[in-house]
Amino acid sequence: MRPKPSPLTDRGGRRFRRRRVPRREGFGLLEVMVSLSVLTIALLAFSQAILMSLTAGQVQREQGIARDAARQMIERMQAETFSEVFARYNATAVDDPAAGNVFAASFVVTGLKLQAGDVDGMVGEILFPTAPDALGGLMLREDLDDDRFGTPRDLNADGVVDALDHSGDYQLLPVAVRLRWRGRAGNASLEFKTYLADI
Image 1 (cartoon, rainbow, N blue to C red):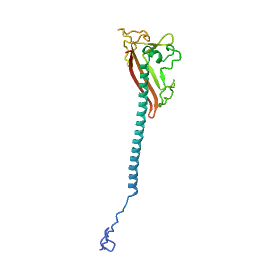
Image 2 (image 1 turned 180 degrees about the vertical axis):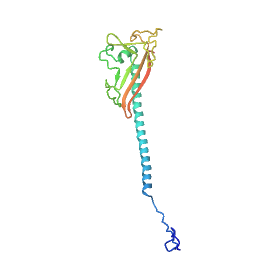
Image 3 (image 1 turned 90 degrees about the vertical axis):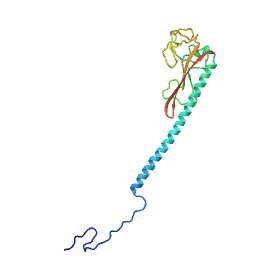
Image 4 (image 1 turned 180 degrees about the horizontal axis):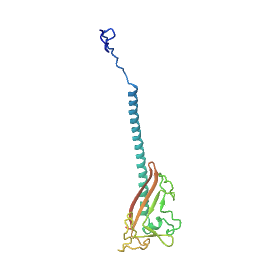
């Protein structure tokens, strides 16, 4: 009886050597695709990091422009006759101290773009603790509950916080300078608060 052929013998029962398959050199298609995918992800991460760095630099530049504009506006108000600051820089022309007042509650800031829908066309805005009066003007009020201005607070130094108009007798003037603009990272805003006093 003839032996059954095994995988290592032929029909005649002779053994044969298994041929060695030579190792392939280089990369296969799958290895190349995986390498390209890893390289693409690394390049995308690197370009994203560069883009974020450029955006952060632009945002810092915009904030620097806004800070400088607010500081200059506060310094300009401090240089004015103290008793006229509120009338010159509030949001109404009714009480302006002189004809042709060149000051206003809003101001342009060169280097910053307007937000979409900005009503007055100005980036900067000066705010006081005010309420409208019967004549279309604004009253400087010390009794308003507004953390932005630190009120209620005695503004005329009489020891009483009341609901009267103190635009003519204030000794302490709370002011906020707000800037709103459209920047590289979208809409942005900064607000600076201070007190002006007749020293």
